[in-house]
Length: 191
Image (tube, rainbow, N blue to C red):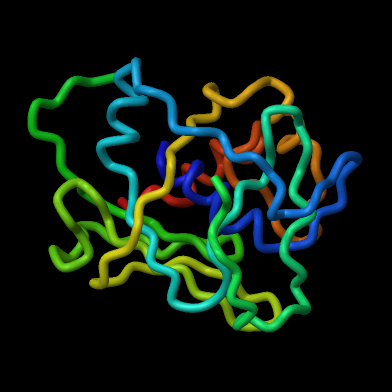
């Protein structure tokens, strides 16, 4: 479940948005990570990835609780804009990471088992890279990064989920919205 949430913060927010209600990307109030309650939430937080920004802007939230969608960072801005970050099932006693599938442009690099140098405890090290004007992709790295607040789909407001389901992000798709998540999960299956 961390892959879809992670992609919300990294991919979707880097493109221009066409939606009924858009606001500047720097003004989207992010969801704070709530205390995990369910097994899925606890597992998601335990295994959330580290994000290393190799090139491009820092992650911004794509939607707020009131369903206002980020206008996105212009795809025509140079990557060196210096963007700062946003302002604000089965029980297993010894879970481990068996595979990872970073994505770029709708396809996945499937890695199973992952190399030990791309894992830090229970966190995988993910690299975000931007090649101006519009090539944004994820890959694995042996360099550490930062973790982002993890928000599960069901932890967002109905309005925020609805906005992500219907907002147009031009050539980019919200990879975890209703109607695309299951197919993306199948595509990312590393075995």
